[in-house]
Length: 234
Length: 150
Image 1 (tube, chains in turn yellow, brown):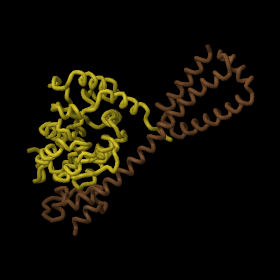
Image 2: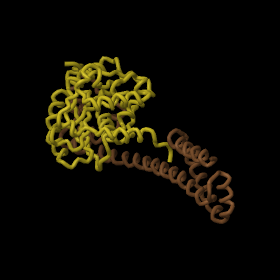
Image 3: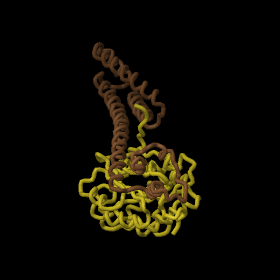
């Protein structure tokens, strides 16, 4: 297994899982992640379906937003919490609905550990694009083409929730888009910065559950609006 | 008509100021100047309606009232954008506050649950065949490390 540098496997890695009403699948997702990565922090974003109790039954750390703030805010909270844990060097963002595969996360972590990249993104389009529903594929491709940073970095998939972030990037990154625009925000941040970014092909399990939870494509309109009207001064 | 030209320019200007401009002081100052000018123009328009109609004719608008309506649309748009931005700032502060509260509480709850990162455990039990990585954050006496020393 990679990363057993210090005797304990992956103890410098923190997996960040934003949670919003995911009680149905959450427990098995957390258990599976804990088998590979000992440090997991779940950020509950004001769930009201027992997700909190589910996290408490597992060995994952729990951070609870007192009110619902959005997925971007949850990711930033998770990063802030994980950064404050001693020895944290790598941060993996992971979706709570079980659509990401741990093998992909490990593969991406290996790339980050090798020092080839400061930030590793998962892409759904490198090899096995067929697993992505057609309409979603078109919209996601358009999102990348519309973003100057995405083009500059030659990204194929800007909106994948699976990322491996190394410590220096995590220290510098500040997610301010509380809602779903955070993915584009991260990409445009990367476009402005000089971090080395790598994309690694991953596959997504589009289960019925993850489909029902997936963000509506109409949300793309909201994201574009949020991104274009940046907050600037009072 | 001249008025179409003026209105399109005004709308584009508002959009530009809100979407592109990065100088906060400049934006804030121009918003305030704009507000004062708008108020003065309104007072003037009420006091001298005939002048207003003359200006309207010059711009190719039928009546002074119509000119006021057009100006109102532009001002309304600018106001909406301004509110939106203001809201974003408030939202950001509110997020920071909620985040701080959440993390503080989580540090207590998770250490009560007996959860620590593996590294902290090994430092606490002193089975140190390795040097703990002391990050900037770890130097701060957090609740967790204080707990670990007990």
